[in-house]
Image (cartoon, rainbow, N blue to C red):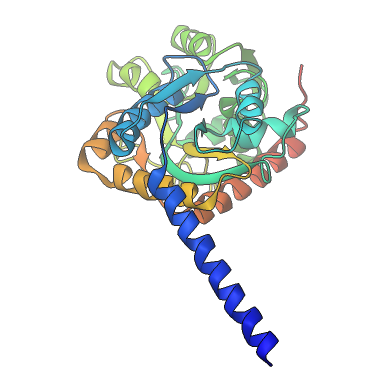
Length: 324
């Protein structure tokens, strides 16, 4: 009996010591600069998100937060490097849909469901479906009707094999049950040039890239890909509400770390980032770039990543996508 009681007291003491140590780790962290890895080149949407996040996080933590760009093979090069870094709280990655897509279209050195520690969803943005004015359609339902009357004739551009713009297009074709001609490009900008010239009929693109041409009357916005209308472009209907039930695709941005990040640091970063995401100035900055602030728990982010992974894997399989 006395042995059992002594063992119980020892367990209690050890638990208290572990809790105290965890609290100490969270309170002392960080003691040196933190790096946020971006899996794309400088100047894009993910780079912008990483830099505004880094600035606010640096102010909150009292240490420099440095953004490092590691583009290559879509987002694969950066993601592999990021998930292979030391899980000490000084290496984070600003992940985007490429994180959940890449392993379905090419060999990968990491498992997107098990090789990371979720921290927080920072924000989500739609892509917008744009059409050249020569296309006799003012909404997705009319576009579907045109495509069904001319199977394989309408051309759509995608910015790279297995990228977000490619898979959002394929998801549209699958759910709408239509056939169009895919024209691949090395990036989104060349496809937009050809759309403006009328050599393409439709393209999915970020709103900040395409909407200036819509406002100038050179292109037509048919719908956004997110489940709800964008606060930045509320006049544009969602694809789901205007002809493609069940359609949803977000160009999301989440802060993650390598597998094994100590829980106290994960919780500290999540708490600080939730305060940042909820702040009026951060919200205003994101909305000005067409991004909806998100926030939430690590568990919620992990569930989102899981759903996104299986959704895009099914699209890759159903559309028979192969790397060219």
